[in-house]
Length: 76
Image 1 (tube, rainbow, N blue to C red):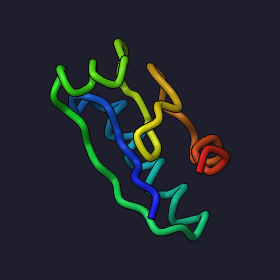
Image 2 (tube, rainbow, N blue to C red):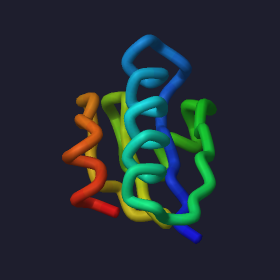
Image 3 (spheres, rainbow, N blue to C red):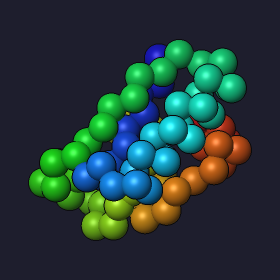
């Protein structure tokens, strides 16, 4: 099972990234769990200074932008 972490404080971009990540995982047909990391200290522990961030299985894949469904599918 893939663990998809959305690193952000719950802003509109963070919510859009969450939506895109969920859609990408469903379209890719993989089992997944979405975890929202909203605590600033926890986000900084990932080395992320700009939100939203996307991590897959604990590895940061994108920072400061909303990836498209297609971009996320490539990362999965």
